[in-house]
Length: 202
Image (tube, rainbow, N blue to C red; front, top):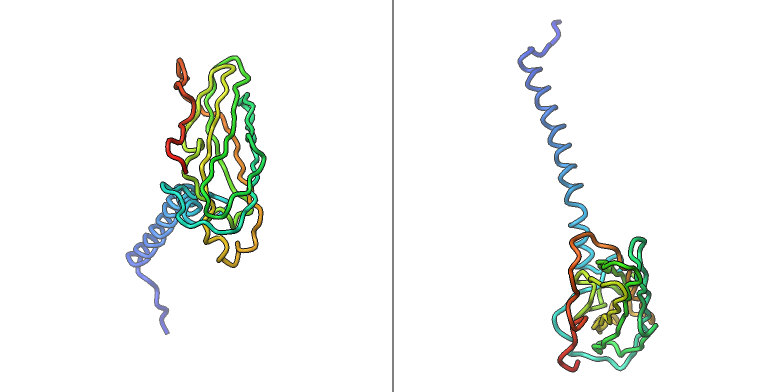
């Protein structure tokens, strides 16, 4: 019996197909790695995963006769010489009630510094129900030497939090901020008037 041996031409085609498959796999993995960070960020914003809060443009129209304890945590990363803290350590709003709380930041260095805050909510299951109407974390903040700034946060807790199995027994939420230094040209003077003011009564 004679053995079936592939022709050199056929073997060459098979080897080329294997090489193309390997290259496609490598390029595909590279593309997935490049897209992983922004996709993860979008996923967290939509689902509230990892304590990511939600940004909304309007206040809640439903207010429950039940309160939620909300505590605040403030931190500053190395490289930013700021004193950053909440004015109130905790509040107890009704669920669905839109309220404003304030933080203060003071530049203790001898030069203008720029920072931006990142935030998260614990427990993580509450993130999707914590809705921010206004927050200083949406923009970069510049402070001149010795300048102090009042920074408001306007938020409400979605009444749906009491219906979901994973969140209905939550009684305390912690909103945590950390200011990080940001690179970029420093302004000659900061904007007058400080942070935006809420013109309409919420």
